[in-house]
Image 1 (cartoon, helix red, strand yellow):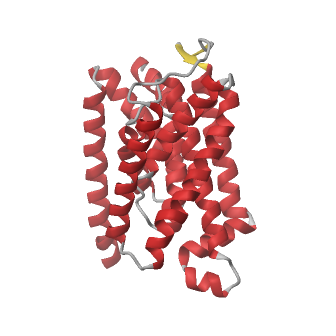
Image 2: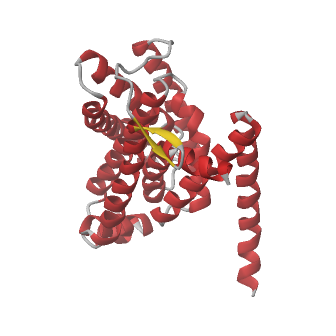
Image 3: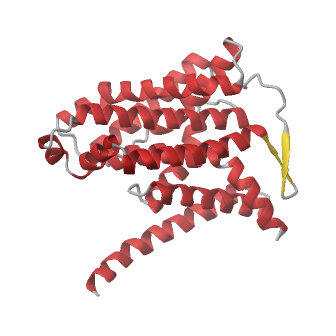
Length: 290
């Protein structure tokens, strides 16, 4: 019971940025169907931008969150116009788009290394206060990350399900040609989604960065779990993404606490995800025969 309690508190608070990043990736994946490998660098960019605003302008960590998110969102839109939109207009296939995103990821990663250097960069923040939850000390930054997940989840769920723009997004994701005939402007809606996904990924990166450091491979280290969370949960229901992301964080923490090695926990969780995806792929045809 102590292990489960510790895993629940630590997993939900420390892995809250994973849920945030998965929400942003799910938005993009739902609209485009693209496995955008370069999204990992959006997360890394958020960590660096937050650190840059914090250390160069004397902003607190909380004050650096909004600039980091906005700038990451603008960079995300820029990659859409410069790279992905031209590729789509020349009818690039799914595999080609993934390869393009992989190349963009490498370009952005080395670009960030050129600008910020290869060494780990740290936020200039005072030692955060801690709150004891179920006997576990949790920093204020972690609590803020967890609260941000719930707030963003509520806002985005309302936005997608209830707002007029959400209706346009769902229509565009279902059938772009039909949506365009219905009077929806695909470009405006697409740009908005790329900005939102980038901003959310940037916020996730800032939370990752203040918890450890801003480093070149930060987003890449987390991308596999971001991808697996979205693939397992499906992108059509963000509530599933939030639940799967939270369960992933708790499970990862529980195995790490049990065996003392995060690498072992990651391997166990990856194998479990793969087995689930394989089971679901074989299960769906069987259910269709009934």
